[in-house]
Amino acid sequence: MRIVRSMELLGLFFLGGILFSGQSLYASPQRETRDHFCFSINAYEDDEKVVSPSVILLLSKEKEWHVMQENGHFCLSDEMVKAQSYDLVFEIERDRFFLYSVAIDLFTGKWDFYYGGKRFAYMHGLPKKMRPTTSCCVEFNNGEPGTGLMISQCRLPGRAGIPPLDAGAPPLITPK
Image 1 (cartoon, rainbow, N blue to C red):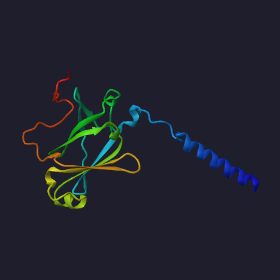
Image 2 (image 1 turned 180 degrees about the horizontal axis):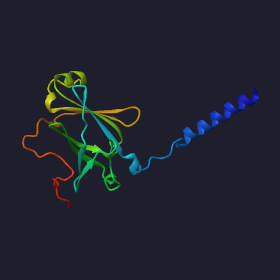
Image 3 (image 1 turned 30 degrees about the vertical axis):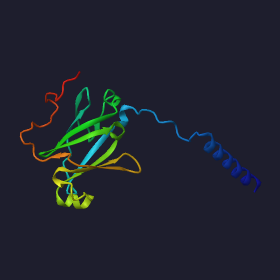
Image 4 (image 1 turned 90 degrees about the vertical axis):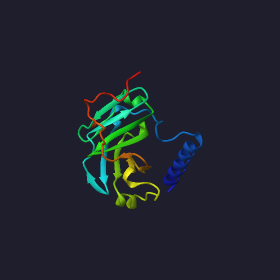
């Protein structure tokens, strides 16, 4: 009985020391390596799974990158990880999507990307003033709890003469 009581007191003493010293049980956050900056995009039109994009375009102020899907994931290179955020462009069927200022920390895990019409608006609670044909919803699942993000005006239905994205296309902006 004494040993159990001593262990309880020792545990409380240790916990109190951690709480009052300002230290945590976990290591301080550090920049992750390239293996951790891989993500996948699962696309849903009106809650029905559709083919996900195979190429994405990442835009920074200085440069742009075409990133191809490999083994179901998009992986960022060490050079890409240095930026704080990116604008992202990709296509699903004939629609083009634009996500602006996505923080670099969100380029991990699994993204669930939703778009569509009236059913999409109803299922995801879009405000009545937002047009579902030009809106989308992204749910970033990179651990618990997942982080959701609603975006308006991110969808351009049909291409209307815009050339398709592919890895061989000329850059949209010129590097400085």
